[in-house]
Image (tube, rainbow, N blue to C red; front, side):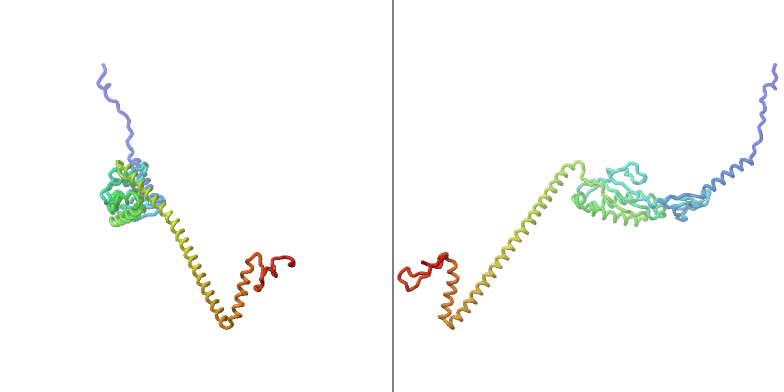
Length: 326
């Protein structure tokens, strides 16, 4: 029969652990980690905010940055050269900015105007990080704070205007005023953000009244077109009529001046003739007769001169005959 010794557990020969090599391996890993953590890279479009023991220490420029290892220093990248945007009333897929997209676009775009009408306003805010220290440490969630401030400013600006101004002629003024208010709020809150531009993307009335608004808008456009056509006809006809009136007035004035000068000349000539007549009446009368005949005779085609004392037709002088009289 087998004895109890046969059922005993066999003894394995296990070599003793060498703790010296384990500690060496840990030390080498710590040294490598310390060396690798001494350097950090900052991209060209960003700056690095250097934290030492979790507190702000310095701002480092793009490039390779040396820092204290083992978690003593930490570098937070802030893209100061990148232009970010916030979208209100709509959302564009694929945005890298976490604050860009809207959680409730329909609630954001619905606004009440100053005349108690509703308008759907979609707009975009473009901004850039100006002060990395303020952006990280002065306000919690500066991007969301800017969204709230932008929505508040836009609602205030739209609420000061009528629905016609919001939908048609007042868009540029709304953008400028909203931009100025957002800049003031950003500076007041110390967001470290510079608002670059506010752009109204789409402004339209509520969808259930869109057709009626389009008809009203078309009627207004037709009215403006009719007014412009009428003004064009007025500008074409009235100046021409004024020109013709001025031309007739100038002609009448010229004719009047001519008649006056002619009358004055005739009167002067008559006075001169009267003076000569008073000096020698017979001679003047004879000269006047001859001058008158010199003017009258060339107007007749046939000229016959008779002796005033002749009792018959002969003798006569035929001035129209080409040859000699028979």
